[in-house]
Length: 233
Length: 402
Image (cartoon, rainbow over all chains, first blue to last red; front, side, top):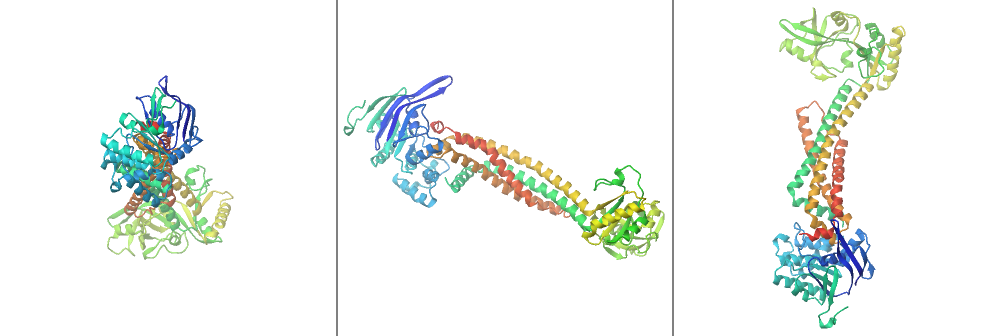
């Protein structure tokens, strides 16, 4: 599903070029649950942004579902994001003035779905994350775990094939974090490819494939679960 | 994203900050309102002048001594050259021209009018019986100046209503004698109250036979000859024949000017329209200021909502949608301001209309449309930069921060 071929990304910081990613090559198949771990500045967020088409590499190619998406213009990249990629963030990023339902409806609205259709779909999505009773609540009236569940419902609203989660439990207590992770795992079991960036060893260990990063390079790629087999080169 | 969704999303963000939204809309309203009120005043002044002219009759030609290259000014004063005076005989000759319904000579001066111990200054109109018709004046009591040869200085006068009231109060004026200058005149008529008309308040005038006025002012010449043509269509022909006649009578020298109502009307119309436009333009500057305000607030808003913009992009909004969203916000503010401004302007016009009933104050439709259009265009123009900034925002960077 995802094929990265020698992707590099550098940032100009002052008069210094900081190389965030150095020739990263990576293949992720549909339906995988991958965790990306590594110290701060190891390039995992940059990698996630590139995967989500929020950023572009300086060199290398990125193929998503067989199509080269490296050089897509703004509008085309937006379309790919809308139709294929869901995002879950550490800080939830819910629009504070919109209700839970309003937030979940945003991607559908951007896709131009008719309001009546939208309403039914939003109700279903919120029911899926167990928030049927909270649809008309504003983000300020919801707990952290509930906020992240709203964000997950939003990410899933367009049935994306790929779900990118950036420290989804980073702002939650351990118990709530586990609940949210269970929700994400459930989505993965139903076929969504899940890529999770985290600092948390316990959370990262739940993934079926672990990618370790350091200094902009992939330094480890393991399949600890028996089904996946051993170490990859 | 559909237009309805864009507008409702934009509206949601405006409604979230009601005070800020209302304040910018108010700034816009004041601009639109100013344009509406000021054009209403200008238009009122224009209509007032046009109505005044129309009340004189559109068949009217005014003959004045002196030659002028342009109409509208007072040529006798401007051109220093010596000119032959207009005389009563000239006026009589004009009366007999084809196409002329009636003509009246006119002398104007100021004189002391007194009766017993009461005395006041009044505008004295020396004319003939036809003046009443030509100037569309109405009699209150009695009759107007007597018909008959124009050189007959019958000592009679017709008083304006306020002159009558001041000199006679509640008493009877008809048939009484008043002293004008050093002569005595018998009051034969009183004009009905008519108010201001072409700069003259007929209520404050006293009419006497033109010959008497010439004796009183010790002059042979006339101030004007007012000519009424038979129908509007006859006006150009009458103008030509008046000019030809007076040229012949003045030894072949074309030394009079004939102003037709249309020319005067057109001149005033042009001047007052230009004035209205100028005032409206000045008022429109405030719309520009409101536009700058919108830009400032939108820039702050873009900075405050970085993560929201980044989120929209992550959720699949192309730059164009983000730009449209912010332009829609500016557009909504402008619409709000325009509606408020129209209400403000119309209300102020109504109040002004009540305060000055003489002025037919009404905001012209074109001005209201132009004010609203200017508000919208200014809002869009000034919102363009913030909207572009929002559209260009780096989503990854915007989302990285909390």
